Image (tube, rainbow, N blue to C red; front, side):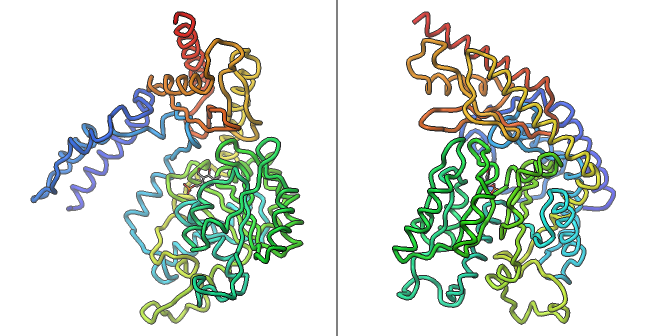
Length: 479
Ligand code: PLP
């Protein structure tokens, strides 16, 4: 594409994106298409001849946009609501232009060194100690998998060299996580060939936090059975309720048994950017590794997950493999990203995070996260003060778990009622909520994390919820 044409289409596209954000509230949050609609509208075979950018972009409007669920919509409250931001988009744009494969220091010194610097900034912003150094992966699932691999390397059982299958000398290796831990921990264990039985789920007690007595007892029991407990995964900000495992109480147990402590702070790590919320990472100065996702709650376009690790040597030992064609004269003096994971080539993700931190500043980021927490607590106060609704879990961050109070209406099945309310709200296209199950009860989740969400959006979804409840209640009383 000649430079002049690139410039023209580039300007058009930036205008298109600016318009998209300006009118984003007008789109239905949830895609309004049926499964298969888009596939049916697209040609089954590729074009033989190149097409104009105008034709391609017209199809973005005509075909792609209607098939989008708009994560950047300010009334997107589902899952963990996340959002991109202007400096993040610019960072992605530049990174696509540079297209470096940041595998060795020399294949992109800027990417390698900027990553080290920007992750050290972020470390300072969330109050982690200087013993932790960071590495960027795509997702928390991959970060946690690498952390568990490093922990396994630390058991000194030559697993890298000899594997795990067919070995009589290898006891069952055990990892412990609360029953509320994210499924990515299960998947990491499966991927590493440890087998699902290697993961022992510890019951969560009050407020959905790991029961530390149950953890201690499980480790003792496993040791008596001849197993090898080697890693505990604690979660700060669980997926269902954002509960916080008691890390300071888990630390002595882990230390007593010389195990690795990995903290999954994928969601809530960002909250520690707010100085008065730093305590949520209490105890993490004793953790061996911690994952946090700027792509969840730090206005960073997907994807960017950070693994902080105190033993980069073990991570390196688990993964470094330098064939002749990748050997460089400086390799002993510099860091090369590919030494610390399964990937060889790596995207220049640090660029967007650097631009975001510089554009907003620590204060700007903290102010936005603080406001999200305020809005969540405000919403929770409406729930608490209403006879029609009940709060189902504490609200330490910006996620509210709640449901229609079955006592206040005649519905026979409160799970069905709450599902119907959620689907009713979502079908309006004016907001999007998701759900979870706690103690066999369907619970609605309202997550606030979008940079464009204001109090007005939260008030609107509250009205929508009450409207839905009203409609469903009338239906029940008529039938
Ligand atoms: N850990 C927690 C606590 C999460 O909530 C999630 C996703 O929501 C993950 C891990 C996985 O995140 P990712 O999509 O980055 O793999």
